[in-house]
Image: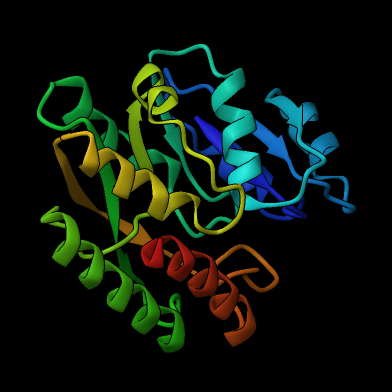
Length: 212
């Protein structure tokens, strides 16, 4: 289970304590200055350092270090519940899907409207281009490690989640989604959805991929 982390010391205890049996957290510290890596180590998680900034850079570093056949990705800010991981892993384990994304069902106040609208537009364009039955870019997701490495994903910024779906669809993967709870993050403000600027940066990176 790969957790890209940038300054999530406040949220990590809650997130790591909720991991269900059989799921091993792999924390990828992406240059935190709040002691996130030390917190994760004290709580027994494996920690990898990725000094190159970027969401995709952190995810890729975790993918390289992972040793399990199945790999999952999940935000580490407390907005997603690790106890719901089986919802996204089981369709892949059963061979029903090759890539499963957790479509967010937000609690009240958990997902700012500007971020929700941006996600909806990108998901609609993704569906139009690939035919994949998706309504969300799903920050909780699961696939097999070897297949993901074979995709040769190159984006190291916020375009990583979109490139994964585009490349998987181009490779003929079976892609689907399942509902997961989306909560208010555990302290602070999201680096992506918490501000219009953060959302704009994510949309910018994803738009470059769509344009290419």
